[in-house]
Image: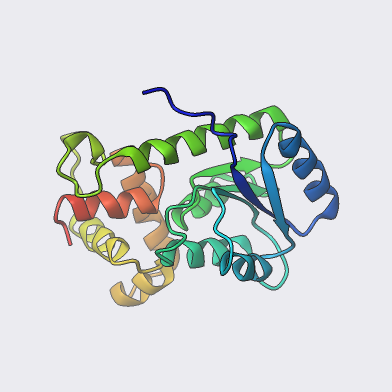
Amino acid sequence: MKEPSVKEHKRLLLIDDDPNLILLVKDYLEFRGYEVVTAENGREALDLLESDVPDMIICDVMMPEMDGYTFVSNVRQDDRTSWIPVLFLSAKGQSQDRVKGLNVGADVYMVKPFEPEELVAQVEASLKQAFRQKQQPGDGSDSESKIQVPFDVHLTQTEMKVVQFVARGLANKDIAKELNVSQRTVESHVSNMLGKTGLNNRTELARWAIENQMT
């Protein structure tokens, strides 16, 4: 069955404290057929999510009142919103910034300045992936619906402990307290496991751990 156009009736939540970027991205996405709702920071966006759940979130990282990391952590901890694809837009382009963004639950991390066409391509790819996941059986009985990783993945004892906490929904700072290590150490373990498994983010890592009864 052919996938429907991902642009049909798709509502995007765009969050950024730069009004010029909001105007530019909103106009570009609306021109491409999307409906765009905007917010100036994470706190305002959470208020919007109380009454309106979008098909995708595009979010800045550094914002007043509530930054993107805190906002996305809240999104991932709520069953109503945990499935929503999230794309980070950030001026911070170092590898540790990308890793942190993916670790907190973003699906895509793009660095400003960016090409509008690339943004649209990432939005479309994320929406298609979300559509395919919704089409898959939710009981895990179909092997094709399960997270796929290399068969020879080996986790250290510490990584096993970390992934068990990830599967329980704990944030990196909380895992650090449980294991009596630094948050940076936990982030490093999560990054290593993403590299070993080929998974994209903590959400997939948690799902893989649950499906394979690691918890």
